[in-house]
Image 1: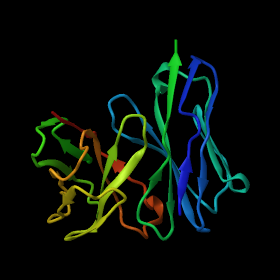
Image 2 (image 1 turned 180 degrees about the vertical axis):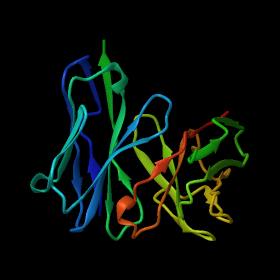
Image 3 (image 1 turned 90 degrees about the horizontal axis):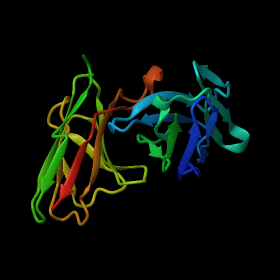
Length: 114
Length: 117
C-alpha cells in the first residue's frame, strides 16, 4: 500500500531563512510518481513539481529545490531565502504506476514571519 | 482561460438534506476527482472518474454519490447518509494515464467549503 508521511505539522521561520520540508513515502511499486503541491490561504492547490521514480536528479527552480533519495524513500523540499508569500500548507503526494489516484501526506503548515 | 471551477464557494446545509457541489473543467481532461479535506489533515479521495459514464469509489465514498454524464462536469452529491459532511471539498482533473508529460499531474479547483448547520 502506498503511504506518505510529512512529520512536520507546522514550521515557523523568519523571512530570508532557508527551510526544508520533509516527505517520506512507502510503496511496493518500482515505478511511481512523487509530487509537491502548495495550498495558499485561498484553498486552491497549486502544482509545484512531479518526479518519477527513475529520475533521482535533484531539481532547482528559483528559490525552490527538491532532493529525491530512493535509498531513504524521501522527497524533501527546500525553500531558500524564504519570503512571506511562501506561507502556505505544503503537501507531498505519491502515485503508483498501477494506481489511478494520488495519496497525500498530512501537509506541513509553513509560516514565514517578517 | 482554461481551468476548473467549483461552485458555490461556501455552502450551508441543514442536517438531513442532500446537497450537490458543482465541478466544471474546460481543460479537456478525461479524468476527474473529488477530495475531502478536514482541518489540519491531508486530502482524502472520495470518488474519481477516468472517462465519461464511469466512476470508481475512493477511500471515503460512503454517504456521497457522483455522476459523469459529460466530460466537462463531475458533480458530487453529499447525502444525508454522510454523518459528518462539514469539510472543504476539492475537485481536480488530469489527463488520462499514458501521456507521459503529465502523468497523474492533477489540477485543482478553488474548492467548496460545506458547513452543516
